[in-house]
Every structure is written in structure tokens, then in C-alpha cells.
Length: 306
Ligand code: ATP
Ligand code: ZN
Image 1 (cartoon, rainbow, N blue to C red):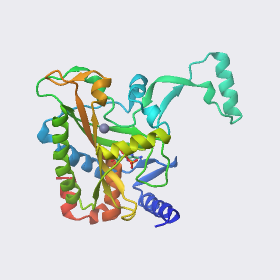
Image 2 (cartoon, rainbow, N blue to C red; image 1 turned 30 degrees about the vertical axis):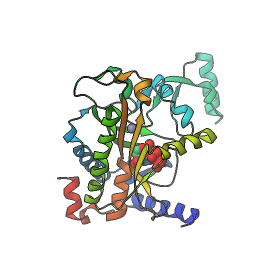
Image 3 (cartoon, rainbow, N blue to C red; image 1 turned 120 degrees about the horizontal axis):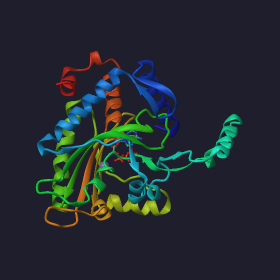
Image 4 (cartoon, rainbow, N blue to C red; image 1 turned 90 degrees about the vertical axis):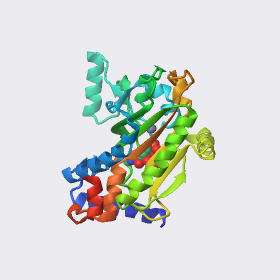
């Protein structure tokens, strides 16, 4: 498929989801309203992804879709992925500044220099708020977590699988390197079973994050060489352009060192996470089984709504 044909395929699937009123346009690519049916499927995927981790008895915790700017800066998001980031700006000026702001609005002029950085940023991955909360030594038997929430990434696209606002279900393991890597293996077993049970084709690959620029290319290469990221890719737009619907990341001691987390034995903690892209899985299901949920096979709906 040529790049032009791929864009047409993206637009075609998005138009079908709009026509079926599953997604509702908001005027910006990658930002959509969702129908009750879309949400029902998404919640079914989330429940199934959550249930897969229940055997680990994780601490389940929710955070708002924002992180402190201090965390956003500490995790190097702005340095590594400036093209995706979403720091929040607000107005902190006086009456004179306000008049200037209103003038710019009236004249439809750029007003970005009338705003200033706030103390929060939009969350780019829903596991980020967890790590700073774990500062100190883990208790005996601690180290398994599960969270779900909205993420923001500035990657406007007509592809309905690439959103600016989307939800992840993440399972997180914090412990020794062996703890994290053996835990990741359990997910390498579990994830295919879930994807097969809901009728999604997939393949698995070692992958990299989209680190920015020339320095980023080196980081991407090293991430693949060290097999730090595994993706489960679903070929919604053909085998040559599959989309990552689930990813598993091994962060080594990155967050343990940054946020001063140690294991129950006092060693510097390593961490890993498994992230399900809930909208991606949901859109993949509509692409695979059609936009009319009442026609979906019982084998699939019985997994989503047991
Ligand atoms: P990609 O390489 O496709 O940009 P990713 O591998 O960088 O995705 P992760 O950072 O590992 O994504 O995020 C975990 C999961 O979140 C992904 O497997 C995917 O399902 C989902 N996800 C990531 N970016 C988006 C997006 N823009 N829209 C919808 N879901 C996304
Ligand atoms: Zn994560």
C-alpha cells in the first residue's frame, strides 16, 4: 500500500466509524466523542485486560489525566518526545495583560506569549504518576500495580487508531530485574490469549519509542537491541502497516533511580509496564467484526461482557 493509499484507508475506517455514530467528530483530528456502544466495547476490553492481571493481586490506583510539571520534567518527556508533549499553559497576568489578551483574541492573533506555564502537564502515559508515589522502600509483597486513565499525545492524524486523547490500561511491576523480566514473560503468554479470544490477528515485535531527533535515533536503536519494548501489532490496515495495540516496556532502573524507589530488600528498584491501548483495541474490534455489535460472534462478546 502506498502512503497515499494508507491515508485513504485511515480516512475510510474513520468515516465508517463516524457514519455508524460510534465516533463523533470534534473538529480536530484525533479528538472524538464516543457513543455508548463504543464505550461499552472499550470498557469490555478494559475489564478483560484488567482481569488478566488479577492473579497478581495488584494495587489498583487511579490518577487524574495530568501530572505535576516536576514529574513531567523529571521523566525527560520534553527532552525525548517534545513533538508529543502537552504542558498546560494558563493566564497569570494583570488587567493590562488581560486587555492585550482580549485584543489578540478580537484580532484573531497569536496569543501564546500572553500565557505562562502552569505547574501541570497532560499525562502522556498513564503509568507515569505512579512512580513518584512509590518513593522509598517497597513493603514486603508490594510491587504489582494496575491503573487506567486518559493520556495526551500531540499526534494529530486521520487514522482513528492514532488519537490525541486516548485511554490506557496499564499493569506495572516494580522489583528486582528478575522480578520484572519474569513478570513480563507472564504477559507475553497472557496477551496473545486475550487478543485471540476477541478475534484479533496480531504479530509481536521488539520496538522502539519515537525519540526525537538525531540523538533519539541512537536511543531507539539501543531500545531495540536491548529488547526493552515488545509490541503486539494488529494489521487493521494490512500486514505492512500494523498498529501497536498492546506494548510491554522494561524501564530497567530508570524510575527507581529517578524517584528513589528501592525493593523490600533495599536494592534499587527496576520497573516494567504493560499498556493496552483501549481505543486501539476497540477500533480494531470494529474493523474486524463490523460496526454492528449485535452481529459480533458470541465467542467475542462473551469475553467482553462475561
Ligand atoms: P506507537 O508506536 O504506535 O506511537 P507506542 O508504542 O509509542 O505507540 P506506548 O507508549 O507503548 O505506545 O503506549 C502503550 C499503548 O498505548 C500502545 O500500545 C497503544 O496501544 C496505545 N497508544 C499509544 N499512542 C496512541 C495514540 N496516539 N492513540 C491511541 N492509542 C495509542
Ligand atoms: Zn507505562
